[in-house]
Length: 414
Image 1 (tube, rainbow, N blue to C red):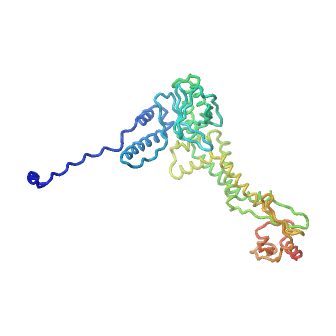
Image 2 (image 1 turned 120 degrees about the vertical axis):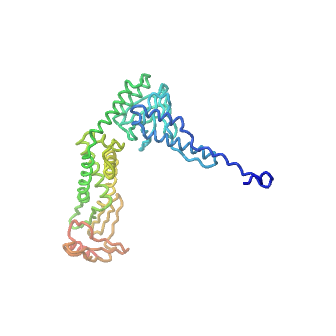
Image 3 (image 1 turned 90 degrees about the vertical axis):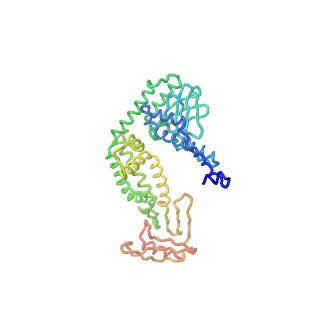
C-alpha cells in the first residue's frame, strides 16, 4: 500500500498478521516421563513394553483431546492408561482373569497394599484386606472383602504359569512387610524370568512347528476317512428277522466331520509335542506368541504363530471336536425300519420318531442308479399319500438287499 495515500487519509494501513497459534500437542505428561525413566531400569522393559507403548499413545491422545476440546470439537476416546506410582516397590505386568477372558493390567506393590490399574476402574487392596493368597492353574488368586481376583504374570502380553508361585511369594512378602528391593522373593522372581527366556532359547527349534504341523495334517486326514466309518459302525442296527433297516451314510466331506477330524488331530499333536519335548513345548509356544523368535519371517513366522496358538488352545480344540462329534450323532442314529406293521422312522433325536402304516404307501417304484452303484441295478423308493418319499438311495441296508426290500414292499402295498 502506498504510504502517501495513507498519510492523506485516502487508504487504510494493511492489518497486522495474526500471531501463529500455539501447537495443540503439549509436552509429554509426567506419567510418560516416568515410564521412559523406568524403561532404563534393567529387566523392566522386557516385562511390559506393551504397557509403555500404550501409556505413550494414551498420553498423546489425551493431549490432542484437550486441544480439540478448547476448539469446541469432540474429544477422542482413549484406552485405559496405566498410571505408575513413583513410590511403588514392585511393578509387574499381569493378566487379570475375567471369566473366560484375560485383560492386561499393571500390578503395583508398596507398603500400603496392592494396586491394579488398566481395568475399567483401578483396584486397591490394602495389605490387611488381603486375607488369602494362593496359586491355582498358573494364576495367583488374592482374596479380599470385595471378592477375589486372579492374576497371571505376563511377559510381553502372554501369561507365564511357571512364575505364578514366585509372584505369590512376592505378594506374601509384601503382606508380611518383608519385601526388600532386589533381594529375597523379588530376586527369585527376576531369576525365574531369566530362566523363562533361557528355556525358550533352548526350545526354539524350527523342527518343532514342522513336526506339530505334520502330525496335525497326517492324523487329520486319517480321521477324516475313519470318523464316518466309526460312527456308522457304532450306530449300526441289526433288525429282527423279516424286517429291514435303512441307515444313512455320513460323508467324509461333511463340515462336521472335517471340524471334528482336525480338532482331534490338533489335540493329539499337542500331546505328542508335550511327550517329545516335555515342558519346553509350552514354553516354546508362549515364547513364540510373545515374538521372541528372531529367525523367522513372512510365511514361516505366520505358521509358527498358528502352531503356537494351536498348542496353547488344545482345550478349545477338544471342546470343538466334542461339539462336532455330538452334532454328528443324530445323523448317525437316524434310520428307518421296514416290517410287516409299516415303516418306523427315527430322526436320531430322543423321542422324535414317526410310524406309518402300509395304508399310507401309495406306490413302490424302482430308481435308476449309476454303473456299479447297486448290485441289483436299481434303488427302491416308497411314495406316501402325503407326497413324502423314502428310498434306499445313499443309505446302508441291513436285513436284506434292495431287491428283497422292493418285493417285500410290493407284497405289503394295499
